[in-house]
Image 1 (spheres, rainbow, N blue to C red):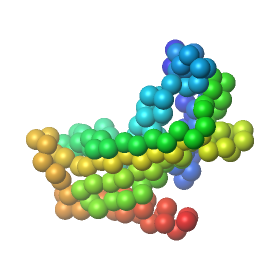
Image 2: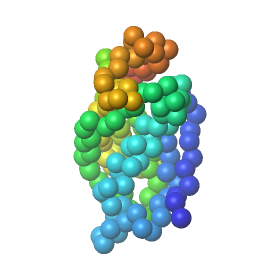
Image 3: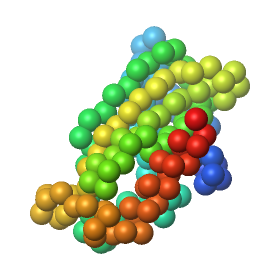
Length: 154
């Protein structure tokens, strides 16, 4: 059984995990490290949907966004009964590539558990780079606005 997901309002750009299935943990009683990457992916998909650039609509338009690189720094263990909030934002964007940043915090204490980044590009169905600015200006605007909004928060 997969854990339940509660998606928060679009302006938070967060996702909250409502507990974890038993198979998520390793022999030390901690959530296995591979799951953090999966959570980052879910948060990314949710963010892009909130921005109006959902994966389904992009793929229907012939745009793919593969992962080029992923990095995760485990600062503190997440255990079976813990709840975490995942904050994701567009850190960098240049119409052809983007970098997303992630923070995972304990919902009860606010303790920073994990940070990460993922880099992606935009390709057509034949694997050629696509500039969203040229080909899909509405999505380009959404990504640029997301970067500006994050910059304003800092």
